Amino acid sequence: RFWADPAVFETTEYDFETVARRLQEMAFLNKGLTINLTDERVTQDEVVDEVVSDVAEAPKSASERAAESTAPHKVKSRTFHYPGGLVDFVKHINRTKNAIH
Image 1 (cartoon, helix red, strand yellow):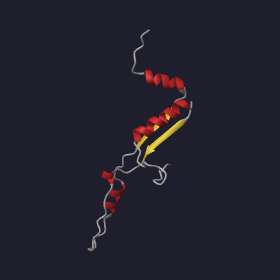
Image 2 (tube, helix red, strand yellow; image 1 turned 45 degrees about the vertical axis):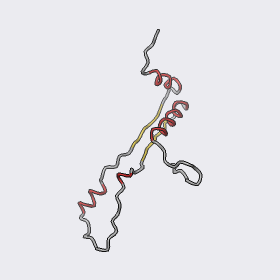
Image 3 (cartoon, rainbow, N blue to C red; image 1 turned 90 degrees about the vertical axis):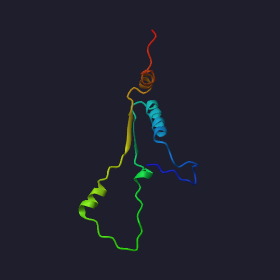
Image 4 (cartoon, rainbow, N blue to C red; image 1 turned 60 degrees about the vertical axis):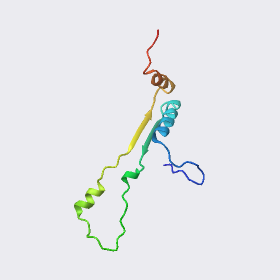
């Protein structure tokens, strides 16, 4: 797990694709290494603001609590593993190219 410390780093928000690209490069360079990347961050749209009220609310039913706990949370995940290392890298960069000979 990695959490950037704002006292040390200028940027504490990272783009998933940028990190994935860098880890893929590391997997190519380290033949046979498996790297798993999982982004468990919650997006701003998924954050639910709690309403502070002076009026007591009725307790939630079991079905309401279950629905909240099983709400889908999208998790981005990628696994990088290249048994051939640099050979796999060359195949990867040439996959969209046509051979001229």
